[in-house]
Image (cartoon, rainbow, N blue to C red):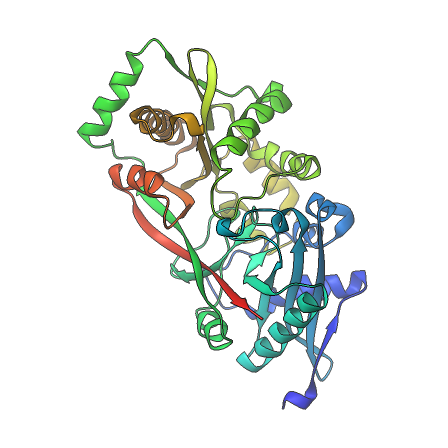
Length: 384
């Protein structure tokens, strides 16, 4: 049957549309898959609409069988990732692949071989995947937690994909975890004592962001992020075009009381970003804002009521990371946002992550507030 399959690079807008449409058929019977808004999905793979392409290049491929699209994959190279230290995950000669979907293992194997061929032609000697496409988007393959839908900016996948990737010669490089917790419950006594101590410390101030000063607040958070995450596995600094894109996408779901900045002696030293789970609102839309989806989404954005809040990013400046103060600031921000999430947005569940498997500091914080791992994503790698 392999001789009936063809793998070809995409070239046109119509090809990109077919690339985006495929998961809608493959996951139509999966109750936990969240259909992305097709316009957003198209924007991610269109160079003119995605700032990531200002420092990256990609080739997307479609698998076709008797005129029918049966698989897809992206091969891509991030030039900034090539300059990062190899011990942080990327480095010279490391390309990536992602956005992988296929009807059968045979199709996936051929798609992966074609992606690897393109990477080798670009001078790469190693591949990591799946990374779809920036490390800041949806890194890793879901390997645990198939029984509930992903939150905003997290991926979903078929359970069979893990075996397909591993049989293709790939081994796990890094695991990323998300933690969930019941935020209607108060935190353990020890956490309460730590928070109270921080509230009595005149050097500490935990403040809400001011959305009216969006760019100024974003610059503060980005400065802390770049310092806090600089040594993390997989870190690639965000560029101005990407920051602009993120601002446009996230500004509608930014609420002052859900994003906190911690100050020490008047200096911003830590932050926590929490987002209402937009996936709860877009899942029923099945990828389209027409005819009335846009109105439903607009109403939701004005006063969102959600079950889940997601914490995609936290950061503490490196100078404080090994101190007790780091966890104290984290607990204080988590508690204040927990209260707002329950009281003002009706949320009952929180999700923290992703968190690197070897980030013991963040894992300890998550476990101290009685949260549990609910999803695990694996990034795989192979040398050519």
